[in-house]
Length: 357
Image 1 (cartoon, rainbow, N blue to C red):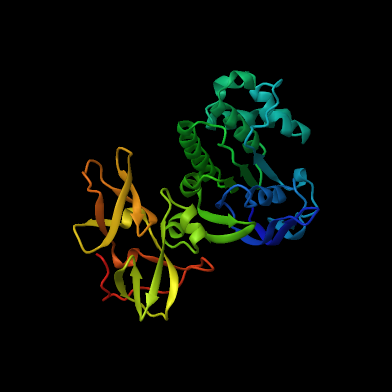
Image 2: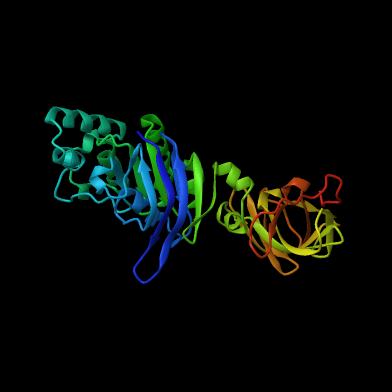
């Protein structure tokens, strides 16, 4: 096991395209870090640089007490689990799991013991003599994980390992991955574009955008205090509502409704609020024009518009809704962002403000 440290790591391809820019991150020994962001944000490139599969243009990568920039992947003491399993089709499960150990000239009895132990943890004992083509997608992914486990590496690197699985199996497998990592205590870097997967797996999230880190933090901290409108819109399902608002004469107004007093000069801001933090009012709140209702069983997602701006709220199931609603929220539920930069502002409504509670 080992800590991983990235210092000002960057990747620029021939032709000048920058995939990763000045990324610095410290991963403690045994920590589960999830790199999350949309396609093209640089998360897989960053992981591949740690693995040694991509050359590092700038900065340093340290695993344990070694700078590994110039080391081959096999010399870095890491094990990688890929999206496509990368199993040898002509080999049995046992042979796939033991192949890397044979190449490292590990004694045969130790190889057998490691494979049996990994198979027991992953419930693969009955499949050890089967070929990959005889296994389900979930079983193949377990074999790929078993191949990584038997190496007893300093760190696991996961590159969207669940992307090829159906929705139900993804839920099962992400639970298995988390329990397994906790049991082994091995440092892990995990890449995904699925923010729900990221929230449920991570000790800490690293949200990437355009090759740069937008925010690092515990999942619920990132959810409840997003550092930017990008994070607010990306983390959470449904995404945080983001609405254009204005501060005039020390008052914050949205859709012609005075939300309360605030310490700021005149400016445009972006207001954020989670769907679950909005409440229905009979009158006097934000006028909301109903557009679409999604019944999810345990909740209803109600979509509509406030002054032409899209907004979603979450309600208990079964309630009849008129065409025009009025909405309110607690004072602490509003998030205020700079409209130009998208960064979170340290502005807050005063406790005595006339918010729409």
